Image (cartoon, rainbow, N blue to C red; front, side):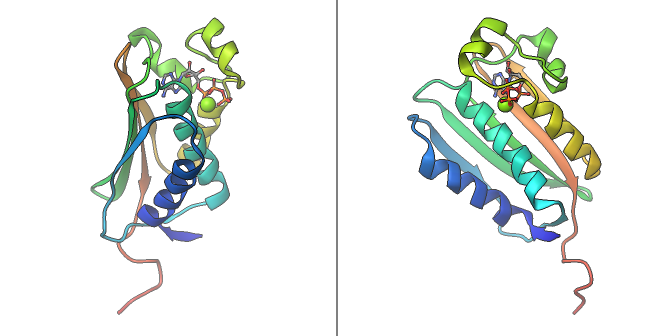
Length: 158
Ligand code: ATP
Ligand code: MG
């Protein structure tokens, strides 16, 4: 299904904004230019839901969660950034492994299985994109992913 990504992303962000219980502020830097992506919307919703719930789950009250969409060549680049506890440098790339959790005791208390980001990586790769993380312990984490896009919905010429 072809969807305009900024619109699609924003509707997911809004759902979290209405339901979140934490005192976390959401900041968006989305584009008003159309960026059409051909995606499985249910699966992509699952991917973005997990990234946003991680940002909330591992963030303290009073932090911000920032959302951004930019383009680079024929790809959109999406970021979700938090002011949370972060991930030790040595383990940043391992968070996309199945069942990997950065801190066992802490993670057990938070609930979940450690599958969210492994599934996210599978989905993003299946859509022709990449996903990675940058993090600093005690400062926060940013998840990035890319997806191929078109400026017009395919088949629409004028
Ligand atoms: P699930 O998503 O299956 O409910 P989970 O959230 O623990 O469980 P993932 O979403 O795959 O699993 O994340 C894997 C691990 O990466 C987490 O347990 C956590 O240690 C770390 N992590 C992921 N996102 C963040 C974040 N925004 N800040 C800090 N740590 C994170
Ligand atoms: Mg998760």
